Amino acid sequence: MRDIVQLVIRRLLLGLLTVLAVSLVIFGAVSMLPGDAAQEILGQAATPESLAALRLQLGLDQPAWLRYLHWLGGMVQGDFGTSIANGQQVSSLIGERLANTLFLAGLAAIIAVPVALVLGILAALYRNTLFDRAISALTLTAISFPEFFVAYILILFLSVNLGIFPSISNISPGTEFWERVYRSLLPAAALSLAVIAHIMRMTRAALVNLLGLPYIEMARLKGATPRRAVVVHALPNAVAPIVTVVALNLAYLITGVVIVETVFVYPGIGKLLVDSVSKRDLPVVQAVCLVTSLAYILLNLLADVVAIISDPRLMHPR
Amino acid sequence: MSRTLRLLRTMPPSALVGATVIVLYVLVAVFAPVIAPYPEREVVGAQYLEWSSEFPLGTDSLGRDMLSRLIYGARNTIAIAFLATTLAFVLGAVLGLLAAVLRGWVDQVLSRIVDVVMAIPGLIFILLLLSVFGTSITTLVLIIAILDSTRVFRLTRAVAFGIVALDYVEAARVRGEGILWVMRREILPNAMPPLVAEYGMRFCFVFLTIAALSFLGLGIQPPAADWGSMVRENATLITFGDITPLLPAAAIAALTVAVNFVVDWMLHLSSGLKE
Image 1 (cartoon, rainbow over the protein chains, first blue to last red):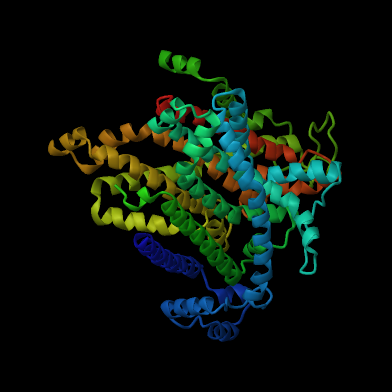
Image 2 (cartoon, rainbow over the protein chains, first blue to last red):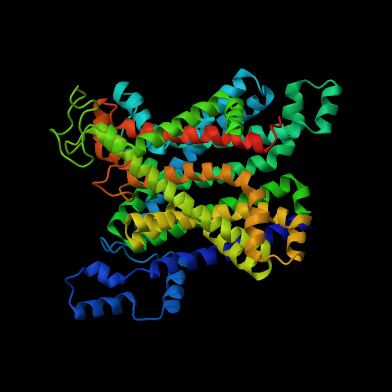
């Protein structure tokens, strides 16, 4: 037990280090901007005086490392600066949209993870049958589709032809919970498809890998049914790879939302990011990038820790 | 030649279909000016015309022929994805081999840089860099190639690490061969099978990324015909139940499915067809 605690602490510290490095990379990338932010805001027609004044106001006259520390310090306290495009606080721009995005990603995960696990276990159970082959071809196809293709197909059938769901996810803070679920269901379905395919394929692969091992053969010889051999004997040992791929796919949801939110005009951070990139609103882009990286790193960390707890062999890498 | 034929005969149906589709796409891309009924960028009719004998797939939001743009789109979209993937491969493979051969601080520095870059969600990092450097084809290709090379680096390094430890590499070194020679003649040929399969997968990934960026209006810029932007430009038609805007998306999907089928078969081959 003490080993695990120690290991978790070590991983957490490593994660913190990664976050720091990532923030440095993000800040560095933005500092490579040809020209500078002041020029960007005021445009070509700006007078040298107004440029100098704005530079002073934005702190651009300070050296880069000082600006970095300042920016990082602000981030830690929840101050993400102000948007170039409309002068609003970035934190207030992001806050509500982040909640919307997490809601959408959560809904997609609630749909995707159980479906994928059940399909994966079934495919491993009935491996090399027609069912397995069909599922395998279907999931490979699903992985290959661009998200906007899936999204528009869903819109075409379910909202234009059948009129069951709205084609635009109109969500405001006042929207009731079930109404919110209903309006987010189509984007969530579009997001789930690729995630289901990935998790299902990994689940099947992890289980099939184990099925060749002697202890499974032993269980079968002892008289355990194929179902019992897969679910009771193989599954516990497949938890580590499955958890890893589930976490990776939840992390994927964070980037997947960018496209899906744009298609459904869903008010989340993905849509905000796209709008800000076309306006070159760097403070917003920077902040969204950092927030999503944070979520990404956290999920990977979580997967690591759960995998190690579920399979103590991983604690002592060969 | 006979070896290729024998290989073709052992292909499962899915891989055969995939290979055929890929060849078809390449032919369309190469002979686009011959096949397309109208030029890529010319306004030839009214906006959003329906399918007719004059315009087989109708016209787009500006009145350009949809079919011609679809055909030219193959050219632009595939060529750019191909360029970016190849660049990513050259960069990633060379650095990966270097890391495996030199080890020590070179390996440490490269690996840590790759770790950090990979800790940032890909599409979002690309969007950040695009907003800094602007959206031109050159920056697009460079950004995607550099970010994607991290994955090639990891794979090449892992594969090459196993090979470097083998006796024949040691023998070549003892013989006094230079690092470049060892990398090119001893390690690379033996690392090829997984790398080729990876090339297919990375191509799909890059292709889908560029399509996604173009769809967002941040990738390949108009007036060049490109499948991602064509979906975006004509998306309003979908709300009227018209499937025309879905055709470029279907074209993207069909190519990635085809490549994936072929890659799947290659992975089976290199893993010795187990299970």
